[in-house]
Length: 267
Image (cartoon, rainbow, N blue to C red; front, side, top):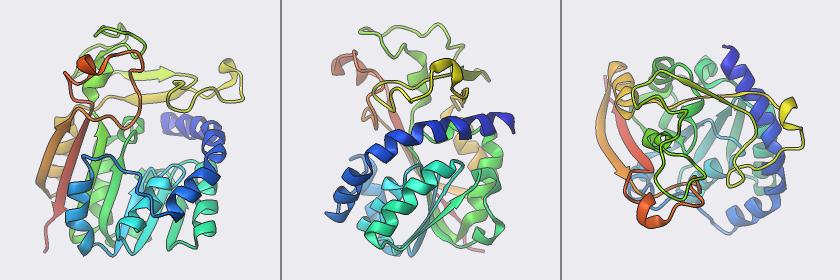
């Protein structure tokens, strides 16, 4: 769909930031680094001993994907719509001689040869907001999993869309229409605390399309595909500096992230 294609172009533009971090990321991973938030680790560490192969949907530059190997996964497969991001990930895994494969694809159309091979599907940290069809996404997740496999989502909480990112007080963003709104957010350029300025002038940049999916919508979509809920949590911990001017005393009054673990039942 047109929104995903525009997002692909936007992430290609953002890939320069990830290329600039490449050497630093390789050294971090070579030293055994694990690029996860504290709220993720207890859940991941519980299931990783049973994971041979993990598919990371919307893997971007691959640092999180390769961190899964340092956590104990035997093989990782990263899927991302951006060919420039996949190229960055490939360089990292080549330098590390990692057991990783990279596939450039819209996750909604990930190759059928991946179906039924994953012990774990990992995703999140700024992934679901770029998806325009959450039920199509959930079906793809279910297709990728082996019977008995898990999907783990650690994602930005949609509540964060309530608030103006640059404010120093809790101030409602005038663009926000409500938690259950079906609105698609359109933007150009990137927050300074995320990717920052790309080389292209703002007017030349691709439009980014985002959706703030309610948590219940994400869970229900996966339930409809036959997955069983094993864990749901909400966390004040953030995976990026979304509110750089907001004191922690205010930021921790609302959830910044949520975690979700679901299992595909054995047939």
